[in-house]
Length: 42
Image (tube, rainbow, N blue to C red; front, side, top):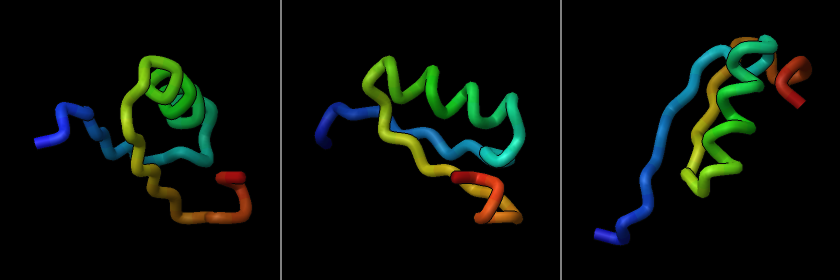
């Protein structure tokens, strides 16, 4: 195993989900984000 941690976060187009993405990326995690509306997730 590579030793890198990966997390799946849903609701990344909403403020809480987007905040979680940023927090985990800042800590060096691999992040997979899911959203129903891709246009809002950018």
